[in-house]
Image (cartoon, rainbow, N blue to C red):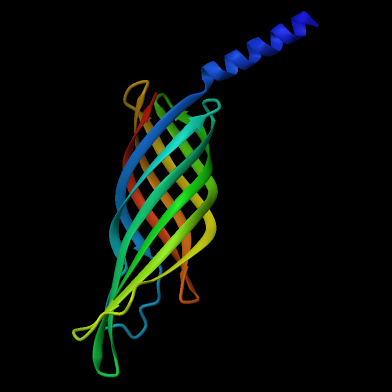
Length: 186
């Protein structure tokens, strides 16, 4: 019995020694998949950013939480001969499982799957007035893929793609960010 308990304690200690906490930041180009039918101008591309933290259970499996700012899409169009400008902001809080696999020395593929609490906010204005902001929040699937390159044992560079959906005024649209980043392990 004592050997079994000792073995369990040693296994837990070894597992804890493999565990690692890390943080990451990134920036990139975002794309909103929203309908531009009837718009005078439509700019669905923007700049965005993200930060996240994770806990590696082993070199291949980690749990992560994060925040992604997908930037702002801008549209303008006429309603009853008045030009209306619409800004659409999107942010997401994510919780995901990250799965990593080595590709070559110092190069790792990473895939993320989880959920995102996506908040879409619209801001409409004209030359005469501004409408109150309107926001909607929805829980959606979150998926990410990427490549990580080891600069040191603790510092990595990354190329990532993050995907989810947002919803506002009963319309859904996809959101994505292609970016670069840095990740630091403690």
